[in-house]
Each structure stands twice: as C-alpha cells, then as structure tokens.
Amino acid sequence: MSLAGEERKRSIMTLLGERGNVNVVELSQLFEVSTETIRRDLDELEKDNRLKKVYGGAVKLTRESEPAYYEREVIRAEEKRRIGALAANLIEDNDVLIIDEGSTAMQILHHLEGKCDLTVLVCSIPTLTLLVDYQKRGTFDGRIIFIGGEINAKHLRVSGPIAEKIMEDFYVNKSFISVDGLSLEHGITGYDYDRALFSRKLIRCSESVIVVADGSKIGKRTVAKIGELSDVHMIVSDIGIPKGWEAGIEALGVKWLS
View 1 (cartoon, rainbow, N blue to C red):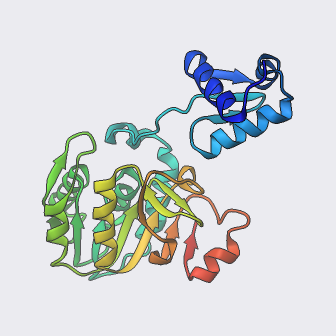
View 2: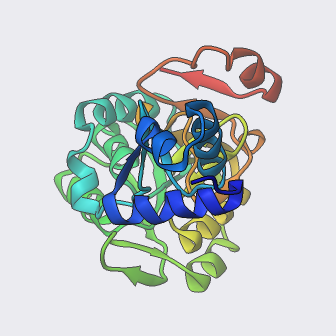
C-alpha cells in the first residue's frame, strides 16, 4: 500500500506504540516505499520529539525524570567527589555562600575544614543536616542559614514562592548551583519548573555563579530552563571542555575548571 507522508507517520507511531520499536526495512516493505523515505519520516518524528532513532530503526521515547535524592547520591559518586573537592578550593575565608541542593553540591561540604568565618545558605535537608553535624564536631567554622519554603519530600529540598521571597533579602559572594543539563545552545536546565525558578533567584542574588555538573549533564538539555550560559561565571566538572565548545565558552567569558 502507498500512504501519504503524514498518514504514514501516524501509522508508524501506532506501530511504535504497540511494539515499542520499529525497523526501517520492515517499514519500507510494509508501506511500499524506499528505506530512505522511512528514514526521512523517522528524522522528522524525532525532531518533533515523538520517538528516538536507533541503529536500523527507532524506539519509543521514555519520559525522563529526576531521580529521587537517595538515588542521585550513588550515581557517578566518584566524579561528584572530585567536583566537590575542586569547587571547595574556590571558597575563601569570610565568604557568604549558597550551597545548592543536590548530591554534587553537597560534596563541597566535606572540604570546608580550615576555612574560617563562612556564612552558608542551604536549601537541602541532607546538606543542612551534614553541615550542622560538622559544626558540632568543630570542623565547620561559620553560620548556617536554612532557606525556608515548601518541602519536596522526594528530593528533600525547599523551593516555591516562600523560598524565592526569602532569597530577595540576601546577597552572596558565591553560589554553587546544581543543574540537570548544560549546553551551549540551551544554557542551563533542570527537570522541575519550580526548582528552575528558585535557581534563577539564587543566581540573581550572587556575585559569582559557579555551576557544578558531572559529565553526564554536559551537552544535555532538560525541560525547564534555568538560565543562559552567560549567567554563569564558572563551570566545575569532572571532564574538560567538550570538543567544539572552546570558542563559545571563551566568548561568553565562562571559566571551566576540571
């Protein structure tokens, strides 16, 4: 049978929904068109975010979502530890800081011993708990300010209008921001819209914005926009600048530490 392009693409999506995957050669035979035509159909469907192309065909899109906090804690743990140590080297005595939520930013706390008279604002319950513990042990010297707001039980963090309002009363030297995606074209992004809005507030009240992101976040775009790369002063990662990014990063004045 011969189908018009749009009808053929609808049929491809129906098959994909039933099977979970489709094959270029099979589709070519089924619709009596060339494999090149099928590949063009799949290209167009992928551009519309309706499927994901793989070798020889395509598969259904799975909805990507942010893992729960305790899942994130064990993903790429060694890389996150390295990033935390690198980022902590940027902190100086008397700094007023934001340590964002997230398992990568939390690693910074393990390297604050010996730094004096810090003020640290936190929005994560695990980060708060660890920092209080270090203060009790005498390995953290400074003030701890917990940013209030609505609690997200899955991710053990605060965000929302209350937290955003509180941040209007603060200015900080440095903010260490967690992201779910970072790309030259799309800037810094996250999975959660409310969380992205709160991150924008953290950025606006900061003299220096430092993004901490392991290699799995680099070159990736997620659903909620946090800001442009031009909003960022430094990126701390476990990998170097990706090939082809050098000129763009330099033009934006962003430093890359790895």
